[in-house]
Every structure is written in structure tokens, then in C-alpha cells.
Image (cartoon, rainbow, N blue to C red; front, side, top):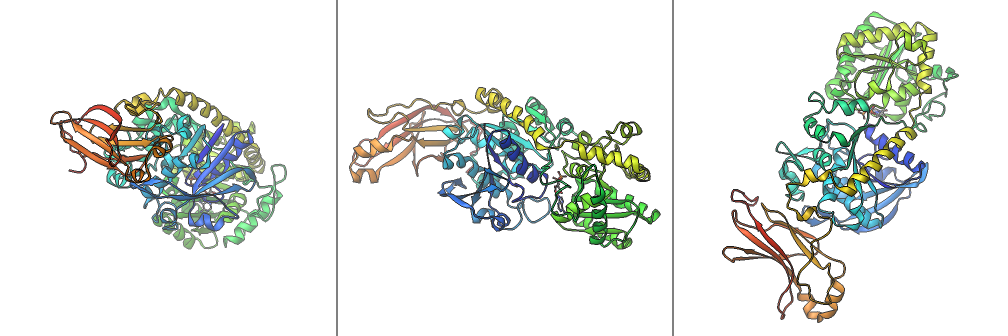
Length: 632
Ligand code: ADP
């Protein structure tokens, strides 16, 4: 299969969290299975600085945005360890380089995301034509690229490059949906027929993820438990109804781990290496962690955290539970690496000030230090309120650091609780608790302390975690099955019937309607104008590839220069004519129609000194009586 990954982050070029890890690893695993894979990413300033020898593959690729052509330059680089997998980079400095952060400067904010990612989604739609490469699957990730699905099913539906592509959308975190005022999306150039409830609007607001869920051929999320949880009102973040409606398309696939990157036997950020059969290197990492974090030497347990500091991660429970523990147990050490919420940053800075030499907080994003925390700690804390999959617990298990997790989402699916029975069976990999409460976390921490005092039990738990196969090869096989199903659905277009039932019939047809009155000798795919939306008579018109040659050849040079295309709306009752001059090929335009009237739509070619040629006539379109067109 030819698979195009469209993502806002791709490790190692751009990453703020798990999405970047997935988009950096899954393409490589799929390529190892024999698929032809390509990745596309915006060229952010941080990516530009990291690029080595990018190749320019196309200059000034046309891209419609905010009703204008805003071309981009296309560059390409490759994964260093998989030179067969290209990473295409969309370069438009005005869009992607206006600021340093990917998503806006405030934590969790989208900033100008409706502009950046709307532009990026538009650019992704232009990519196959620019590359001469049409994908069988376009794999979209979260709200930032979800919009590609509605766009290729409507605006780009006639293009050869997209005709046979199936859309697969992966939800990495349902809490982030790309919600913007409809006016912002309209100004950014989204066609108004998409800005309707049941398409891109969700309870009056533009919701890019909801649009992607409606128009994709398959939806995945990053663990089986999370796939069930998001169907409930408690965890559905307002989209549970929509997801229940699409549940047949929804599959949970637990993320893999890039085992080449996350490998304690060769991680370049570690002072010593180790594996399950010999953990002596882990003891060296432990000492280095204490030193690097400014903590006092100890024979007691070290509890570590690496996390974005956001509410989801349950860190509000960690602060008091660790404070109590540190107050009681002088041998305990605590270290956290993370940045984000200012309140949480203050709380952890406060904890380290209160327990100098025993608690440390590094409030930063620091990949080398994250390896050291994963390897040097004895237990890893991850008491998330919700967790779609979570990579950190997988990393910690692989690094022989049993995680202490809440039974939710991917944590539930990946960590086996250290009950006496499971420890004896050699299957326990961590400590799992249920209630989202301090006491439940404290109880799990107490169990971990008991295991710390029992070296053979601790060794068994460590080994079981280190030996589990979390490689991407397993997950890639599951994605292959989802892709195959999506292709069947895409070809049948069965699932889209319900979504699109409100649209007038023409845009649903894969084939263009027959053209009328094309003079003999002119190409049959010359022109078409389709009123998409009876409320606004929003039209799209396109020039077919063959018209210009024979037509222009038949015209005198002066005639060709004066040639104009006109969209004519004839009021069926009064006969009143509205004529719009169309500025160029493949344009969208709005006709200023009146409520309650019916209009015939025709497309004319006007050549000075000759009678106009009728290229296409569309049957009358009724404008509902109660509509208030958007320009009023
Ligand atoms: P999420 O995607 O919700 O942030 P995950 O556990 O799925 O959580 O993935 C987090 C990834 O980001 C891991 O690879 C983790 O090591 C990394 N990470 C998070 N915070 C930091 C940080 N402050 N410094 C370095 N790496 C971090």
C-alpha cells in the first residue's frame, strides 16, 4: 500500500508528546512490512534548524487559502535510519514560522492554529498532485490534520490523486479537538457548505476533529480501553454521541515503542548500559541521576516522573502524596522532569525547596535527562486522570523501572498489577490502582515500598517489564488490518451516505455530471459548475485538462486574451439575470441569491465579438424562503 502520514509532529524533527513519537515510529515499522510510506510535516523554525541537506522537490505549489492562492515550497528529507521513507516539509514562512511554538504560545492554546493547520491541511491535499504520487491511505493524526478528510471528500473529490484514497484518523487525545469560531474558519477560506452542523460544526462551533470523525473511513485511537472510554459521556469530551454513531469504524491499537530509540542497552544519554539479565548498569544510572538532580546519596527508593505538566496527568495527587512520604521517610528521593501548567510548576518547585537534596524538579523539556530519569529511578509515577495510551509507562517498563499507574486507558491495557500471584507467575510489571484519589495513590506507593524491600520480587517485576514486546512491529500489523478495512469502505463510500445525505446530490457523485452544449471538437470534460449549497448557491467550477489546447488554438490571439468565463444565475420566476465573472480555473464563488427564489445556473464562455458559448447548464436550484445568506 502507498501510505501518506500527515502529522503536526514527527520525531525526531518535531515533538511535544506522544503524537510525535507515533508519527516518527509507525511509518518506519510499516515500511519494514513492505509498504511505500511517506510523511508530511510543516516546516517549523525548529525543524528548519535541525534539517540536514533538505532537497527542494517543488517550488510554488499552488494552494488555496483564504480565497487566494498562497503557494508553498516543498522540501524533503529522510529518516536517518530509514532512508527509504521520505519526510516532506511544507514551507510557508508566513504561516509556520510566525512564531516558535507549534500550537500557540500558551500551554494548551491553539493560537493561530485555525490558520496554520487549516493551511497545512489544504497543503496536504495538494501534495499528491505536486509529487505525482497518489496514496491508497492518508493517515491523519488529531485535530491538526483531521480536516484533510472532509476536504478530500468534497473539494478535492474529483482529483485523480485522491479518488481512491481512504482516510484513517487516529485520535491521540480526544481532549484536544481544534475548536474555533465558525467565522474564523470561514475567513480562512473553508467553504461554507462544510461549515454546517453535522459537518464541521459541533454545537455551533467549528470542530476540526469532529469533521475528521465524520468523513474518515476508519478511526483509531491509541489503546483498546481508551476506545471504549471515549464512547461514554464521562470521557467522550462532548463527542461521545458522534463517536457512538461511528463506533463501527473505531478500533483501539496500543502504541508501540520505538525500541531502537528507547533501549537501555544502547541509549546514548545514559552513563552505563544494561539489560534484563544484568542490571549493574542501572545502578550506575541511579547514581548519575542523584548527582545530576542535585540529590543526596541514598540506599532508599527513587520515585521519578517525566511528564507534560497538565491536569490530565494526575500530578495534583503526586504533590501531597510525595510530600507526606518525604516527610516520613528520609531515605526516599523524588525527581520530576516536566514543564507546562504554571501552578503545577510552582507546586513542584515548592516541593523541592521544602525537601532540599531529597526532592528535585527540572522544569524543562530535556530529552537526555528524561532517559536518565527513566533509567535511574526505581519507580515511575503516572497516576493519570485519563491516558489515551501513554508512552512513559512503556519506556519505564523497558528501562526496568516499574510504573505506578491508575487503571485508565492505555495504562490499564499495558501494565500488569503486582499482585502476589502475578509476581509469582513472573507477569507483574507495575502497580495499578483504581480511584483517582490521594489515598489510592498512597496505597500503591506503599505497595511499591514493600516490593523495594524484597529484592527478588523487584527483580521479577523489572525483568517482566523489560522482556515484554512493545515494538511497533506488533502495532503496525494491526494498522495494516485497519487500512485494508478502510479501503473497502472508501471504495463503497457506504459509510459516507449518512454524513452527506443533507448535501444536494451532485457533489456525492464520483463522476462529474455530463456537460451540455459543448461545441463539437472541444473536450468533453471542459467545464462544470456545481451549486453545492442551495442556501447560498455556493459554487465550485473547474476547467478540465483538455479544453485549453483545442479551444485556444481555434481563437485568434486577441480573442483568447479577452476570453472570460461567466457564471449566470437566472431567476426562474422573474427571468432576472445575475452574472458573475469567474476569476480563473477551479474557483469557488458565492452567488448573491434571494431567499424563496429558484435559479438556473449556467456556465458560459464569453469571447469578444462572438456569441457566448453555453458550456454547462444546471437544473434549477431552490433557495429556501427562510435563509439569511451570509453576506446580509
Ligand atoms: P503525552 O503524549 O500525553 O505527553 P506520553 O506518555 O504518551 O504522554 O508521551 C510523552 C512523551 O514525551 C514521552 O516520550 C516523554 O518522554 C516525552 N516527554 C514529556 N515531557 C518531557 C520533558 N519535559 N522532557 C523530555 N521528554 C518529555
